[in-house]
Image (cartoon, rainbow, N blue to C red):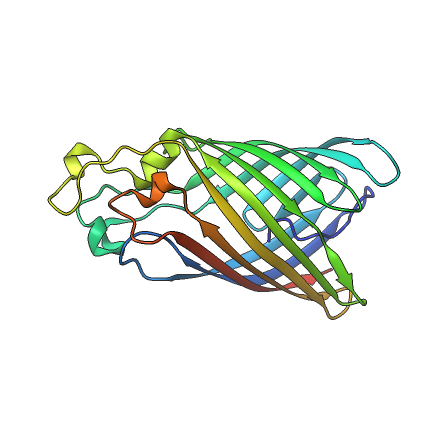
Length: 240
């Protein structure tokens, strides 16, 4: 939902405040579904776009034609991945794995047919010392004056440090039902849809559903007992 569109292109700044709830099922064995309320703050102008846990500093774009444009940006976002040992029985005795702040760059090809984006991020918090690359294809359809729907598909690549940090088992953490495991680089596949219902120029309801097919390098971890993960989002935003 951090990519929910507003279209602010002028030097004026638009503001929004709201509240949302994220419901997420992580792939760890026996872990409960997590429901997390999150405050929503949106700020957008020609220089930046802040929405929820992500901020994009906009760089000069390149117009290819009347219907095609390359957009560039510097990205920073907070990722709440990770766990504590009390989150599930399989994690008892494991050291905590923390989320953190990730930063990098993004390029997007925007056209009348489809929008294609590629994003590279590194763990600026230094917890995993890893890197990820996200690639996605999406298109937004407008239905009347109130509804926007954006189906999307994509892939995210985690390097071996990222996979090992979140799904590996160190020698000191191994036990009979949880052997040591060293994670390798992995590519997950994603599909989902985002939606916006705009009652008027001030009031909007936001939603999102996403399913992730996990790579074999993650499914093979003794901490994991499922082949997919999923998340849902529902929120309200008031724009001033």
